[in-house]
Length: 181
Image (cartoon, rainbow, N blue to C red):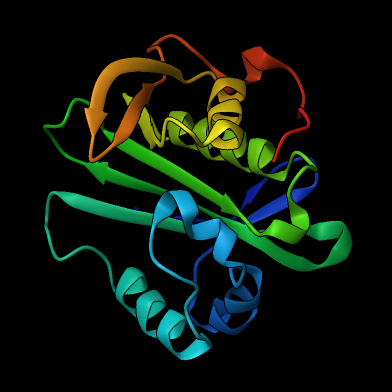
């Protein structure tokens, strides 16, 4: 399946391209973004190499990577990313989702709106079993997960709590965009 642009109220989730690396290197340049997700900011060259790998797709036939950059249409700028790793079987969820929004754009509800758009799009594709893994101290990301309808479980993975979307839940059930990240 080919992914396309996903539109929300203020955002366009645009399929990731190698050409996004330079602008995204700036968006993701704050070391504080990496406190919970690990690593350090990438240079534009390193991010370009990473995006080349992501765009090429997963080397595992049973895994599909869907990645988007988040464009704030009003300001015509990239603000972050959303992604879904789709697995054909196993692990208990068909799609593991994640989001990150650059420090300069946090507190405006962008992560919540982007994550809602992603989850709604996945549901339109009949993806069943959506989950995320969130560090227990990452309260902002937990707030986004809650706003999208994910709920924490008692399952841990690599120091993070697994959050799951109840099978009958729709992000539209939660109303409009909420303030948050």
